[in-house]
Image (cartoon, rainbow over all chains, first blue to last red):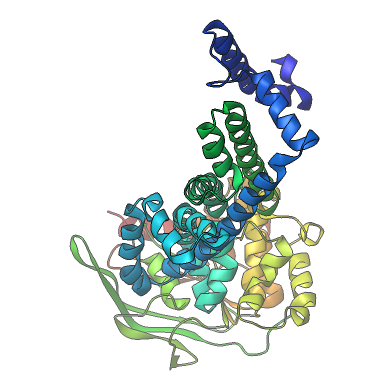
Length: 260
Length: 258
């Protein structure tokens, strides 16, 4: 594949599935003669996004509101997940006490708690942040727990022979070793976080991409609904790409040949 | 860099048994060993003779079921700052440079890293890696990684260095080079070394004494003094006395492994 040998080619190759998807979408809408109030064509959605971001700017407030709530909830839930995951992984006693509880909470679909959260926290960004935090907690918790536990026995032995305390062992051995796994959890968690945010925006109907989708679908404005979906996709993609970039820098030793 | 206080390591009538799925296993039985200060003692034995149990005992990872591990005659509890350990794998932290890895024992015990810097530099020089001190383990060859591991085990100026088949994972050429280098390092630093190996060549080349262990449960069956003059070099490997000692150990070794 000499054609795709350089960086530009690599970028094009990544873009190819998206281009194909848009082409199929366009072809179907055209071939089946779908009315645009049910499913708009790609140029119609493109124009709506352009209008909303450049001409009238009405999409920015919603986009920002979704970004803010998702980011805050992600930081809160992710932070808690890393702390709780590390603590349970480092202490057998706490693991025995708390792990079943975490699994129990995980078996309840988080979305089903959304109306209750609304009842407790009110029609406010707080409700959205709490649901987002709750929903992205588990993948990051599991990533942390598994990663911290997976430290090679020979390294753990080494730290024992050095008379290192449990916290020093965690800080210098288990935590860095878990970094790759924590990032994997965060990548999954970011997707979950967006789901939580949109669900809460459906319910509260205050603002955000979720509100926009709900509201415009009710008003037979499919163009705006699909435009909001596309923007959500972009948000998910940017978050994932930033996390991957951060992982590559911070966990630079993984994927390199010849491990210690 | 020579340390001031050298200790005598003693294992007094040590037995270790542990539970396994097939019932209790006796890993070591009535094991007696004395390592004089600054001497190089190898332990040679068939696989499963309790060699790794021995490493765990001396490095404080394991308590004897009966008997005691003593330093200068006093029974020891737990890991000690004056014991350095080099494992079979280099066991380096992949996110730390060679220098940071050498300094790890200082850092994790909250001692002053600044004060230990000159010593860490000197140790990297001693193992021939001063030019590689800012490299990460994945940028180093297996032999280089093992040298970093040796430098790390020496950073706290141990009076006893325990080495658990440190060259077993390396290729033959690298092993021979490191073997010669380890002798040089030992002659410079003079810690007592307890060297666990299943290589007769390594044992004869490096040691003042070679302890031959029986199969499980592990016991001392021979204690052979190696009288080859030092410093030993590549030519030593070809001398008749070297061959004679090797053959003698080979015979004992074979008897332990029916």
